[in-house]
Image 1 (cartoon, rainbow, N blue to C red):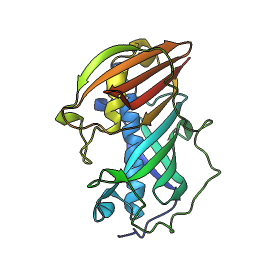
Image 2 (tube, helix red, strand yellow):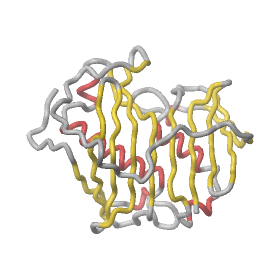
Image 3 (cartoon, rainbow, N blue to C red):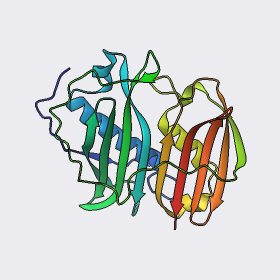
Length: 246
């Protein structure tokens, strides 16, 4: 493990929004928003000595379990955004991390994320094998108005798509990348919600991993001011997404 001499418990990193990250309206895609947030979290873990490379010495990796994103507006092509991140809690096999995105000093996005330590050989959670006491924790400094929650799936839902997991859907941990779930669902959502920036917040629950060639069903339920998607394999739910819109 190598802790950078530049390590700080709160990290800020700048990103320039390029055209490949933007939707047809010129604003950042929600999927690329999540990618930028997660890349910032990864950068902080790297300077803090708990990165994927460090953890792979023990066959471990961080995997996302829950994520809430609150959005006042999206950045556009050419903007430089500053993403700030810190850790609310870190113990044993799990961690809660906060992230904020700013443009010209204005906060436009807040996110709360829940991560679990995952053994990539045994395919199950376990305690973090690396020391982390050098991280100062900020349990009372929140990036969102509301915390992440368990999405309610106890309602009638309609099957809207069948999907087979392809190689391009997998990440370095050899399961479906968390942003891919979001991409699959947003491709089935009302495009006006996306193009007109009607989504005020969204939550994601990652429940069971999916692997190459798995066959899944995508379900949708639309109610007043929200849309819920779920992805199932057999009789088990692998993923849930709730879009809250105005």
